[in-house]
Image (cartoon, rainbow, N blue to C red; front, top):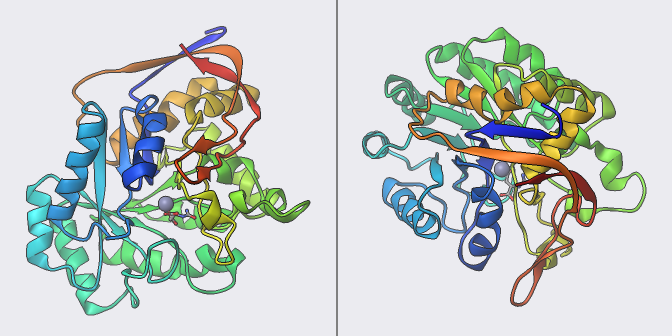
Length: 338
Ligand code: NCD
Ligand code: ZN
């Protein structure tokens, strides 16, 4: 293998591309590295029906025809069974459940998850073989939010045993037991939750650019999740949760949650897996597991080749009136796409 590695069909199974100027600025970082991925629907107007999803898909295709955008449909209290069928008919296969108020643009999320309306929709989603992605956090104490949400995950997993359920951006080691327990539970993992802990955000100076939901947790959480990634645990796919926000919003009193990790993600994953002697598992973590777990039918084959060569992660992405600061801005990364 030496100093060159080739990855086949890399996928990012959780990312935020936004709209307008931000979309145009950030999307290339993703489509230059990944053949496709799950694009989250929490836009300023949430992607809560089929037409909005198709319009967004069209916008993304116009910017890059070869990227495969798997647009998640935002599950709201007003989503109907008929709309769910329409979405399925048009090829949308992922439903995204946000507990109301849990994160950025989740005000249209579901306030009472186990309510009859949601349960009926999930019953139907199960029949249609759709996939349910969940932002799994309660509204309790920050460090316990994912843990507190686990009973709801378990309830859903056992009520709908044929519905594939993804715990998005796994962040707490206490979730792993639940993930293992139910055959229909899967998860995504971000780069930041497997490399950083809460101290990186606030143990020294305060680093608002590392503030995200779910919040970074303990070194034990980080290390346990990292080991799952390094072994390419079959139930887990890579999903960056790259979530760009304008610097002015990150630094404002309401401090937007989200880490913009898209620049040099694959390169940084290579560096991480190499450091831990696990490069042979990177292919499964960034592609094969996702293809199996999301039943993806990918016809073409695209490869990305990386070489061991040092480069710097951009300091900023400049926009007309503002900028976006990437994860690990200015740091060096010793792998490069060739
Ligand atoms: C995401 C965003 O900014 O859209 N923020 C975040 O902190 N991860 C939303 C999300 O996935 O929670
Ligand atoms: Zn997200």
